[in-house]
Image 1 (cartoon, helix red, strand yellow):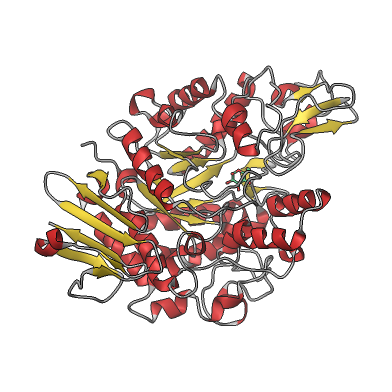
Image 2 (cartoon, rainbow, N blue to C red; image 1 turned 90 degrees about the horizontal axis):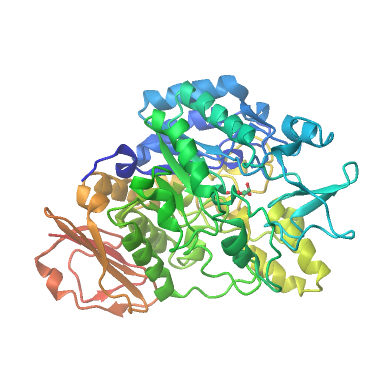
Length: 550
Ligand code: GLC
């Protein structure tokens, strides 16, 4: 067994705009994070991933970077960053930054220069193509609606943008671009940063013949078949590893839209020397319908469980998994995979149990540790997210039923996870002293950190306990995994074991009380459960979670 710090730890993910505002301008910032480091530490996590905090025009809330070496002034600038890093290291917390290198902002100097003309030294930092008869070079779609090509009247050419038109894709074919990115990585590593989450890293190598996507392809199909896993992706990642990553004791996790069971291992196979972990989306796109994210379908629970088994066996002994159920791009986990009404408390704890007992490094997204829920704003005007707003415009243009579309937005919008963290029950939920950049979820008087602190059986305290249990049991970290009842429609029952110990985890993913004969468990010890039942009565209560060991 190869023991490694980033396998044994737990990551806490911060969406900085919505975490804690220290300046009173309604926008979360770095000093706000510093104020709350003791709180984060109290959870028992040892790594913090912070979504982008660099200079940015914020067309996509920081995922459009205009200067990779400058921390946004709105967030406190480079000075605040240095203090943050120092305060984190004092507390033995590692910092994972976000590297957004598939694209930059159109306001980055590179793009501004690139636009000036074909002779400009930066021209080939991006993809410029001639269109056909007033039509874009091909039918590729932007992940955020519309064509992936934008016309530049000055150059008479189109440029590629897989996301918004303010996020032009960088041309990794150009060795100068790769060197720029490696320099940026070195810049932050030499400051002491402990790792990077790499945004849409699966997209960085393009299919240079720019093939037309099959007619009628959905966005997910395009991502899997065309945008992701391009011909030189592994060459680039190996080069980055050899030239930069291998020089430091750091952790990397690549965001991998379009990465699947066939392509996943290549990114994280130890012997390939590329990345440590990848985020795949097989379980998070599970409810996407034929028309994508905003066409949500019921979740197929058997399929959901199978995703975890399949990925575990894919990576067993070869790579390492990342375990997450949500982030800033998806709705709240308790609303999506649990029951955020009658069983919010129970199901939030059950999901925490799942996160902490699978094999792989667990990621906790801010607010999930207190069971924050989706938000239902009354109209589209309350939404900020560019993906949601663009999808809305497109649906309207296509004469969709907009009442139904609003329901889909309530269920799927990224803003569900972006409402400010609820610290207490005072005005603006203790997040800010002023009206925040996006409305607070109206349930903040009931759901907030302060009230969770006061209550020993709270979701928050359950997170602390289950994280502590995971940290103290190497079996839960490295031990083998087996789904014991893959065909069970309501229960998720699996074991984790090694030579020292065996754990059996039983999770009732339903609102029903389910008879479940656990005779074999009578000789086992109950390690943790989310109901206060000391004696097992032969049935699993709604959303009950029990972890046994022997
Ligand atoms: C990733 C980020 C998302 C962003 C997109 C474009 O998916 O997680 O928030 O919008 O990349 O950078």
